[in-house]
Length: 371
Ligand SMILES: *Cc1c(COP(=O)(O)O)cnc(C)c1O
Image: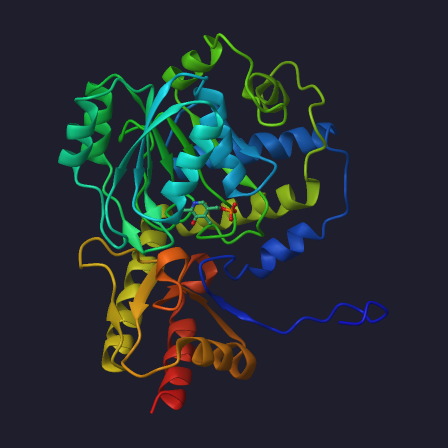
């Protein structure tokens, strides 16, 4: 790149693990002239975002807001606010992001108990039950849609087991949010975080978060200060809620304009229609890929519609074809992460990228390149 020249990136088709393609209305909203982040008009925009975040999370939680940083900061927000040194935390691990939660919980000074399964599998409720017999954790944390493996983790039974043990349930919904069914209140989720760049199809950099009443009580009864100044919700919540909207940090104004429009698009389509679209495009891709000799890493019934993790046909150099897709066709697909690096592809059909034309474009490029 030559910095004296105007920025001119290639016109990519985003079919990896995020970011996903963004609707022109969202890009247009993002180029709205700036206003101050404490301007009364901006406070109204924050209120709009809060209401639409509640609707899309299917929750009435009052403490529903957006962290001014990406999904990992939402993860950290949930854990640093609920855990104090010496607390026990059960972390379910079925991929990269479960491991990240365990790492953060340890950094909070928590005693971490790990419930693990091989990558590509989901956590069985009985495994959690067994683990809870030997400990008394403050929270159980689990990833709903494990983007590193393509596994959809059922949550309802897990939630009951966590409740019975008197623990809070913390859920990573970064990839599942706005792409598959997610009922925060009905499923008894106490703290949840997501990201904007996956099935919501907004630019990366923000993290929608919601805390139940019970989680707020735990926060209010802490004995120690939250370890992080920036993510301390006892302060952030005054910036997001009703009466005393005080300066905490400078809100990312342009990103919030974009988020507001992306949320409007989700609600215009309707959650049910959106989930159906994600499911149907997943099936279309699945049929095409199987004809070409690809197979799925995850067993049927536990596959994510928005993140297809697939093994390649025998004898194909995965990195070379991925490079061809990007350089010749402008299509981005993801490679494997961690233990699955070099072994799988992760094909994203998230938000605006969950589209018939995207699927057909990728399949015909693959047909031409895989002989
Ligand atoms: C992408 C992702 C994250 C991290 O989000 P960032 O925006 O990259 O920080 C966390 N959990 C899951 C399941 C993800 O897919």
